[in-house]
Amino acid sequence: MKKKTKVITIIVGVIILVVAGIGGKMYMDHQKNEEKLIGYQKIAAKQIKNTFADVEKIEFDKDSIDRNKLSGDIGIDVYITTKKEKGHIILTLPVDKNDYKLTSYIGDSPKEGKTQETMKVYFTDKTSEEM
Image 1: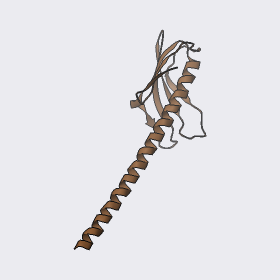
Image 2: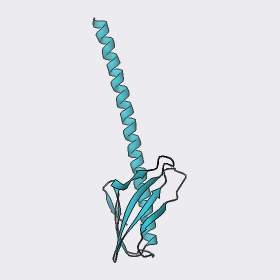
Image 3: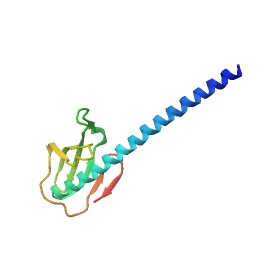
Image 4: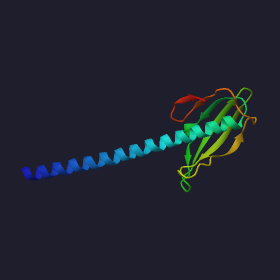
């Protein structure tokens, strides 16, 4: 009886370790993807600052994130506030590390130009930064 209990305890222990290992790996992969997404958002914010005039605020909408299952790209709504108007664009962010092309489509984009002043950027992880 004692030998059977010992074997069951070892099996349960191994199962717990395997499940914990898989869960840890999934968590680390998720964190890595989040960091990559924030990196792309920073690049996009700089591009928006150099494309549109008088930008005061940029907000990346976490609720709008849509992952394309075929290409792997990520679509995200971006709200741009300038001194005179508000605009909305949708960005497509690549997930392939060799693809650095960010594309945007749809929406009401603000007046073209270059923003000289600092602006506030709100990222999907609820952090913000002045650029």
